[in-house]
Length: 522
Image (cartoon, rainbow, N blue to C red; front, side, top):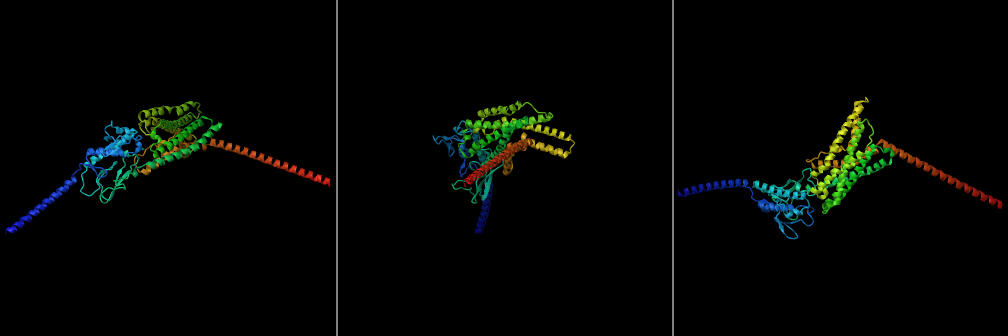
């Protein structure tokens, strides 16, 4: 009995022990699922405290930045959680909150400092997110900071995506569409390792350099077409005395402004902008006075074009509204077209020199509105002019008792012709897509750049090469040239025939004389 009793007690205790262990196991699993990490992981697998992580990640942000963002020979080297001067071997703590640190003096511009600070702040937020997210009991690629982006726990055999952060675009603005970087988690629950033995994230899809180059090339080609069409048009306007009227005077000045704008934009984008994509020490980086002066002249020519578009609208509106009476004063238009742009451009240049003297003043900012405001004002006033002109045209067409569809078509044709002259196509393209498919946005930007570059060519076609008055003068000149050529050819052929006849007559006389002398001798 005692043996049986002992066996029963032993079995009972075993069952109780198993139940206890099972409960502990379940409890442990639940505790693990709610456990939060106290350290943050960086690429390579190191787990750091929040303080050390902040310093190390900020140093990594600095190390990953483009060498062109720093003054020559001043970029520091990363040494763990520190940044080291390669010449003096002095170590600096990479704290982005300490504005007096020598680290800030190594950057070329304030924009680059902002990029570094944004990266450091994103790393701190990543660490906080890691610590707040509970751990999982499943086998996963561990959450990590790769130096640019924060990656969550990822299941084996999958590819994780993350939006490309704005602070990795060192030499351009962030794309208007959302691009994604990728990071691959292998089947063994480890992150992808490249040939150098480092954890690797693919940021190649974040680049927009090729898109920018395509836009620049489109701009250059379209401006080149306009330049080729504008030069003969200006020669025609200056050669014929019959075209020396106020209306053509307005066209000539607008054409000159468009031509000079095309020349300066073409030179600046081909020599300065495209050079910065391939050259670490580009002219933009040097930020010399010649580069800034050239860009200022480009801005002036841009604004002059808008002012002459305004003059075209003002002149035509006044001409039509005043019963088609020819206007006499032209000095006021010269003052508006060539003089007014000096004021905002000078204010802009002084502001840039004092507040944003970097990269030849090409970095956009709120000070650009000094030039944008008069441009938009000119377009808005021209839109009002066009609306009133169309109203007058429709009123006059209705007074002729013609059918309504024909009136509408003639009014539409008149409106369409005036849109590029007044620059109103820029209003239709003023909406800037900030979100959407990258390919759609690229196509939209290509249309904007093409319309900008082709304006001079379109205007020269409509108001010179397709102008009936110009075509008549060209045809008359051609007929005169042809007539003179025909007369000259006729006279020269007649002289040739006369000379041939004279030579033939002389030869016959000589032959007859020789024959006569021979007969006499016999």
